[in-house]
Amino acid sequence: MSGGKMLRHIQFWILAVLGTVLLTGCGSEYLVLNPKGPVAETQYNLIIISTILVAVIIVPVIALTAFIVYRYRDTPGNKASYKPEWAHSTTLEVIWWIIPIVIVALLGYFTVRDVYVLKENPNKEVAPMTIQVTALDWKWMFTYPEQNIATVNHLEIPAGVPIRFQVSADAPMNSFWVPELGGQIYAMAGMATELYLQADEPGTFAGFSSNFSGEGFAKMQFDVVAKPKDEFDKWVKEVKGTTPAMTKADYEELRKPGVTDKFTYSAFPEGMFEEIVAKYGHGHDMDYVMEKNPAPAGDKSSSETSLNMQHMQHKIESHNMPGMNHSSMNH
Image (cartoon, rainbow, N blue to C red; front, side, top):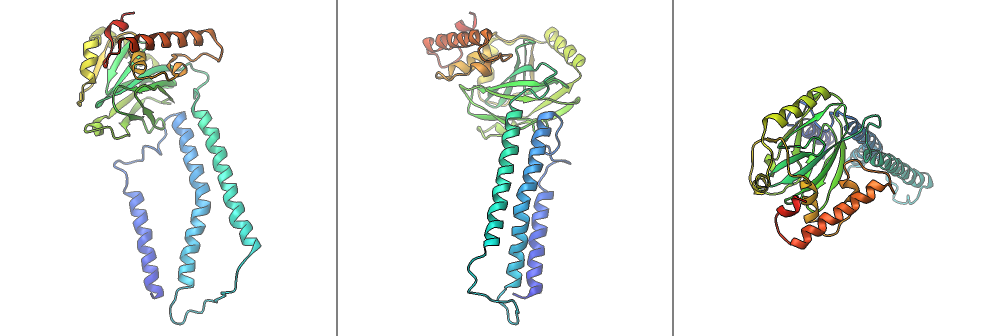
């Protein structure tokens, strides 16, 4: 292959890669790279750091590969030196072992550091608000235990307030994701996972189902509307005064597979989320995640929560019913 033809091939692949990167979004910006809160900002910084560290290896390797292929190509008249007896270089061995070890160590340090940070309240000066997320076929149900309201396929939060999401499922496994506020987390039946998110400013953010869960999963999309605290409180009062309460029959209807519109409820059955988790729990210890406001280790309230959860699970298992047990909801 001639030098000119080789260069044209290299140019083609460079343009193909650039085209793929630049044309891959559906909107005017990449949601993952557009952080709107402290959690997303931490993850964005980790992405940038990781990209730079990985590029330290990838860019020189790609450049050297292109140079070696061109310099030592098998063509008439190529004057590149040929040294078949070359076998070892201590200097090169040190370089290509030490650099990757340093990069892996740095990647490990930054990743572990941020993983622990992301497990905590991102704003220590403001108490978090709890919202319970339940993945259904094929819709999202959000219950607000502190406000005693519920919504379907629509989520409103106060801006500047950290939100502690408790995430579970009463359907096949799914994944809850609001890219501009933070990373995704799985919603699994019988498990309660925990995720902190916060919107720094008022706005509307897209939420998605990011795990295939059947025919209608692609329509499991919802808006997250962040409002100033006073407007959020006003919205809560409006919901409680103008919308019906969710009944057990309403929930059983929501559980049925199908795509639904947005719904808002002025109340929901007490302990519903806890019972959804417990009925598939099979003895898993979900006490810490299930607490509305986690208490320090050894705190009395933590022990009381543990006993309450065990009692609720025992009642469900004793009835051995496939659906939600109505009688236990009344206790």
